[in-house]
Length: 298
Image (cartoon, rainbow, N blue to C red; front, side, top):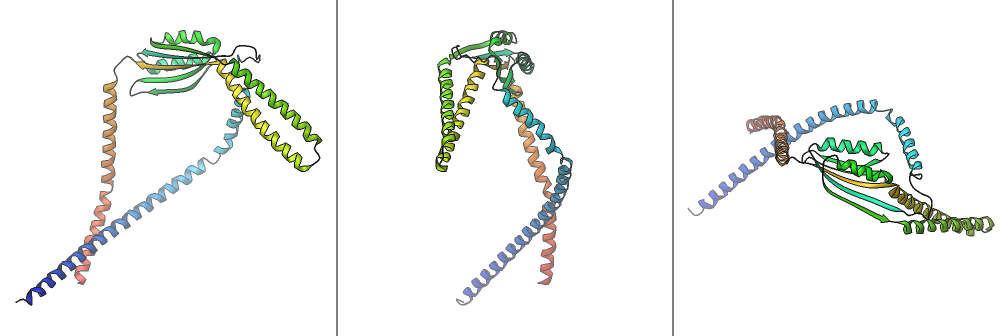
């Protein structure tokens, strides 16, 4: 009796191991079938995408030739930056940078922003940045207005809606401007002296050392000149930061928009899940067929 119990236990363990091995084998078959089907589907999609890519490349083959006029226009704009209107070359004149901030409440934010942009450009100004948020019905914009037109621009912006906040700041940068201009003059004088030394130098080592120093000084001159041009721009063009927002309470519209976005995301996830159902079903059919074949062989 005692000898039969170990035999029964061994038999049950053996049956359990065989059953587990069959289940693992079936699982591997199902996974392999699903992977094979997905690989075939991906290969077919990749073939279609490659065909579309070749058509796009062939249709855009001549686009590179039209890039050079834009680059030429950009270079032209950079060359004109040195001569800003209203920037005085007299170092004794007062250099004042003016900045303004305004907050305006209006009924139609988008229309008000468009009017502000049009006015700034009509006064030979430009828009540094502009942002419009439809959900919250709010807009932010930064304009560069010629300093001589700043007061009239602020008066115009006030009429676009109900003024909620306004601030104006002025900074005298005359000393910094003169110091920077003097620094540039000293560097140019030093550059001229080095060029004279270079003409008199007879040793190659001396000539190389002078060239390195000339290169360093030329870089400093160009860097400081760009800073000086930045001062000229800040003096010639005042910065006006404008905030525009609506009188209406758009919180409900904002919540509806967020709910709509969440619903669209959930719908996309559902469609993506359903798209893989045929592949899973096909893999299951292959798995059942292979399983029946294996059972017949056994």
